[in-house]
Image 1: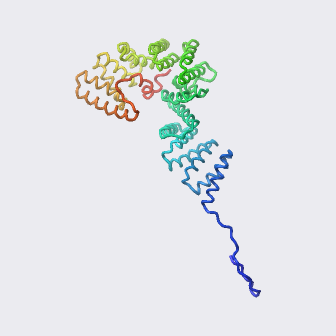
Image 2: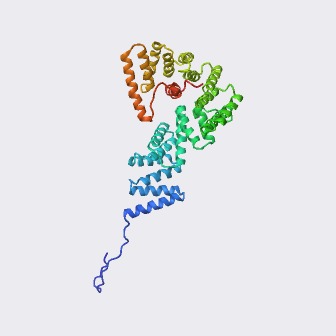
Image 3: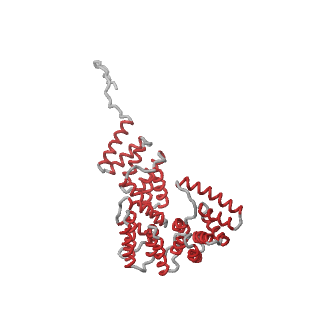
Length: 397
């Protein structure tokens, strides 16, 4: 800008008025980012969130910024906005497993259970940062989500992993107890009741066993049975525990004790039938038959009965049972393995060849995915997950 001479006056020098230089967008972004980081470090979360938002307006593809904004909002319990921040980050970095887990944790708090479980499991599969605390939080929430979904066998796995890592607190052992008893958090025994104590102590025993203290766990279960011999499912739960220790005969005695208390206890029938397969299939048949009569619409009892009949030389009788299983479990190689044998023994050569071909294809696929190979029927390894997947409410009282 130039100063002007006044008309009729002596001329004056024209000069430029110095102007304040404008800050570039880069300068502004760098300062906002630095201030946001500083506010976050000082735990000034509201200020940090505001600063991160301003910086992201200037640089919307700033992935570190979206991560930082998401974590700040999560720490403020602002789960809705935090979820949106992690979604923006994932739109830029879809392979970021840690962000996917954080999105799942937000959705857990928002009551979006199905989405939360999906994103936590996807994030875990993609891989997360080496943060023990985040890993533990993710595993615990995965366990709770699986409990809510009534996938009790699956829920026990992340909870056991937490115990193996050295954790042993009230929330964890209660969740573990609910998993082994097949209970959702909504129907957990009320606090202060004997049932609540039994669930808690059983969860503690399972956690101790995961930490290689099997003798302590066994003693706790024995004490529980001495105090509450008629408590529903306690003998069954202890039997499952003994099966994990490969104490088959002792486990069967517990399943039989559960059946004395309740002759219609489906899972005890199935466990005994599965244990008897190949060791005493004739005895196992009667337990499988009772299970089929008790729950004719469930496919797994039919599968187990088919295996036992086949092993006792009754291939023709096994076929209709195994066909029911094939329709229910079309991707399970063990079913086709058994079907191939049953067809071969009844002279159906073409059907046998077809079943064996499907078995080979499915078995190869499972081997690639899981890193192991299936060599035959393993009924006891399928019982809990297959039964729950078919009808999660049928095997509990």
